[in-house]
Every structure is written in C-alpha cells, then in structure tokens.
Image (cartoon, rainbow, N blue to C red; front, side, top):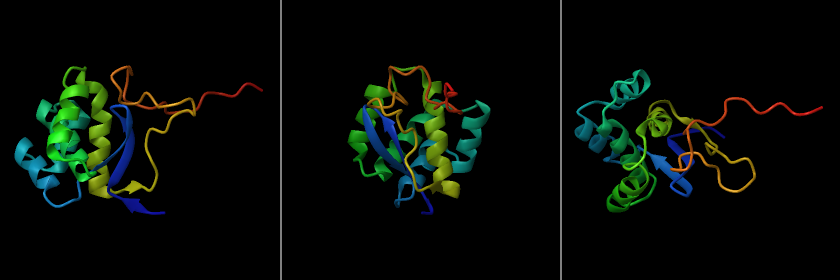
Length: 138
C-alpha cells in the first residue's frame, strides 16, 4: 500500500509495533546515544555499536509503537538484557531504516504458519529470518 515508519515483528512472545516517528522518540534516542539515527544505523551495520545504540533503539521503537516508556524498558530488561545482543541487531536496524526511508506496508518476520515465529524470542538462535524459502520437493 505504501511506505510507513512502523514495523511489526514477533518480539518477546507476540507481534509488536516499533516506530520512531512519534514526537520525542528520535530525540530521546539521539540524546541517549549521542548520535543521530543514521550514525547509529551505521554503527549497527559495521559492528561498532554500543549497548545503548541497541537498547535505546528498541525501547524508543516500542514507545513509538504505543507502549509506555516504563513497559518498554521492562520488556527489554526481561527479553534482551539477559540474552546475547547480536541477535537483536537486525531488529534495531529495521526500526531505524523504517524511520529513515520507510518500510513496506507489511509485517516483518511472519511465521511459517506453525504458530508463533521464533524470530527475536530468547529461544531463537538468530534474529534473522531465512533469506530464501526451502526448496519444494517435486
């Protein structure tokens, strides 16, 4: 349908909205990270990111998606803080990229039809969805 700044993805046990466009979200992200969104995105891409780049992008994305600051922080403390961090980098990149250039009007990380997608749950080994569909047996 068009581009938007919100991304929806399975995270912490359910489909959640992340959006940096509501007033104040990007400003809080910039203040917390002492960098603009594109600089943070570049650090996420080249592996020089700081913990705050990842955490604050997720928190502010959740706040912009409709969650309270307190609830967003609690969710990150429960689902991200105790886990290896690299698995959450693709989500942080997607949140920032949607704010910068827009995202397609569709959910990210849709499951395989067998219940909840494991994407971005602590049980998942990687936050990245498969890049290709499995070959069908003919």
